[in-house]
Length: 178
Image (cartoon, rainbow, N blue to C red):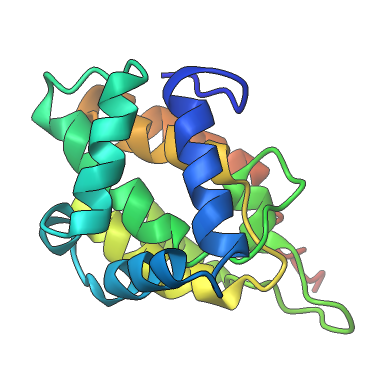
């Protein structure tokens, strides 16, 4: 599913993220953020009021909720977006993960951690790994790209496509010459 900031579910999801990420001093946004940050797995996200409210807004905007795998991926997206403080300019989540903080030569997400993400067998395992990795990325992550990647990862027939795209876009460390 291609998500756009300008229409449909992509517009609703991005606007919700902006509200929760950038208006965190506002009572309802702060409460939603706190509730979702405590959700340690996809089921816990699904059972929260903030997720269910957003889910209904997304469905009204055209989200196709007939497929449980897509709904689980959406819950994973929502549970992860609350860990993104700023929207990165990169067009790839893997590229954003491999960026180095200013004054450092170590990427936000180490090669070892990135490899573990690529080895995630399903959306649940990927959620747990990204839930730990995203807070390390102080430069942020591309919001709708993350959403699209997770929605694709949740579908077994598309998972390898995402893994390969990530592998090509991650800035792997240079091999040292002997």
